Image 1 (cartoon, rainbow, N blue to C red):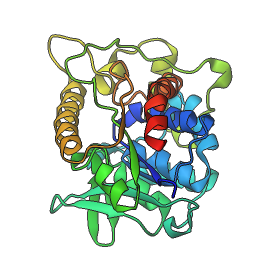
Image 2: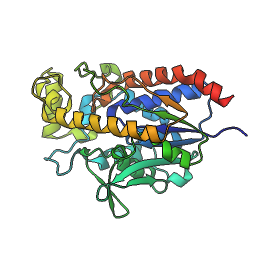
Image 3: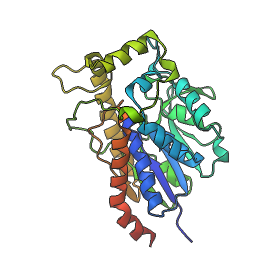
Image 4: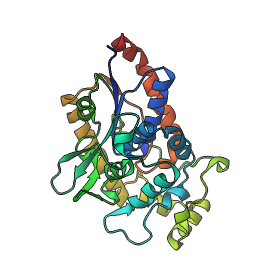
Length: 308
């Protein structure tokens, strides 16, 4: 009997576009994926693959620009997060799909965290986009998601690389992707790289606001000081507010990931090198995707040995 292959896609915010490259590598190698699960950005990519719209997600991610990303942020001072997740999920519902998880072609599940109890929550039914919305709710960045009477936040707080979930779903062989293997102790190049002008997304419909217009103009004029202080980690003597948040998330993810992988080791562990990409640099999908593919390509000989 052929082994059921499951992929467990980990959390890592903007670095998560590399999951697309990992899946591309497996498909090109003729590897049949039977089960998919993910945490945070991993849930978004895993859910997209299970629903059959990985290609549209790939094209959309590669065209992301900062002006487009800003459109998902709250205009007013946010109460519980910079980004209102309902705007993003509404966009995906309108432009891609929102099937019920039970109706997907592949078994899928996402990990979230109960904000009140700290419990790990496995989302395996209901709206796909609602499950993804809950799983990506990084505290301070995305607002929490209310689902079935619970306030849910990012699953990376409790299970950054959901190997245990993948096995519980019936996977005989688990391929796990750890986006956090090289993030601590590495200095990163601070830059804001948009796709070339000819291949960027157009203006987000939500960017018609004074706040967004101001930031968009700031980016176009090259005056990035304010923007970098808000959304990029800076190698400065005194850390900015966002530096503190981003570095704290890195420390948490690194520690929890190490502990969970030690107790629930996968059969194949893929570790893309992504320390140079910041927490919110979603506009660097091209680099992330290619690095994910490169990292998975290196592990294919080991995978073939296990399958034989």
